[in-house]
Length: 526
Image (cartoon, rainbow, N blue to C red; front, side):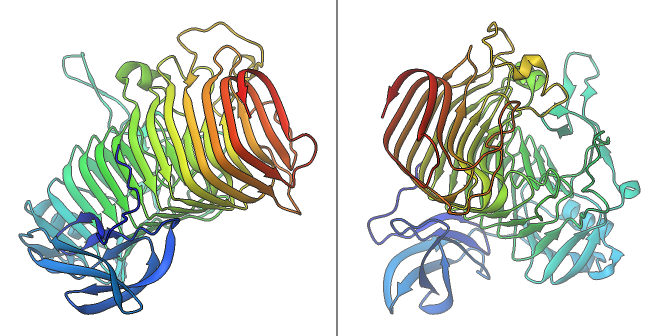
């Protein structure tokens, strides 16, 4: 996995370039989502001023060499020379009959443009409001939701296709899995935009993908989950070389972006928004994916901002495909249950996640690891690194919860028992976690809440240069969703069941009671 450390020279880092836009990283020391204001110049002409560390340049020409400069106080501080990609043809959906009047159903017209577009072409959705039900992508194209364009979903269950969760092969030896819901093959309404076994696709632009979900249609708190499962906004199933950049994604019926068994994925400069209390509106959930970069993304959602997954027991045991090599940097998580969450559907494990130079504001938790008995012996979490992260108003900055109580049996004796149970094929593991150079101010519930399984303790936690300060008027809450976790506030460092814990230069202030509540840790350094 790459580590995009700040460039000490004059080079400007170009993260991604396509025919008419490109993504740059303006890296400055301690910058997170924002940095010191700067000007962007293209071929000697001023374009715009920004303070985002990750920025996107639009309105470029294909197959053209550009000189990009970053200026402050009239002086060039960084620059790069970039050659944009060739583009074969542009298909405007209005040429295919799409009206964009906010009244007509433009689904068939837009889908016709997508299916007609040749390799190397672009489908342009221009300014206007285009109502639609679902769209399906094909390989080797770019889809641009242009400035002033709104792709507006029609939230009518009776008009939506259903993707089956599981279809057996004709010879009975294999299975095809078109849809997934919370880690298991399950029938789901087709997502607003679906990529199924496609490659080399870019979805980009300055427009909006509007899900039109609300508490009167999709966001209902029904204790009996309805089937088919609610649609996602974008779903990529067994895809390769996918880039999603720039667009605003809002009011999702369920998860916003769900890449599934996919690889070589890039998510840049997105705005992902759903109101607090909206059910299952996770921001971006890579499931059994590898080589994923998430940069410059703004999250404000009703559930986890990012949740890394790899299926429940059946998927983990059958396909043994962990999520691995995921790099999350220069993002802003404004609201959500967890800033970056690992789990809980992690039957095949997670291998190497780096979270760097991000900012979490008013999320319930910062790093949130959630697992439980029953995830299985292939569910091994390792190589989780938090570095140079800032948190503000986070209820509990660091949580490792091995007793996560969701699922029908989540509060059963088997899942919730704090006694040591036999290790078997259902027992998960939490490996090595490294947290360094993190500041947390105005926290509320607990600073650190780590609870491993007694029969499978957390193997290694290293925390270095971490500051945790509690708010003066801290609110009460539960640090972790587990049986036996009581509401409280200003609790310092709580750790149960770990093999090795190193707390190097970890500073607490504003806590109540004992700073350290630690039991059953084999080796403790502080």
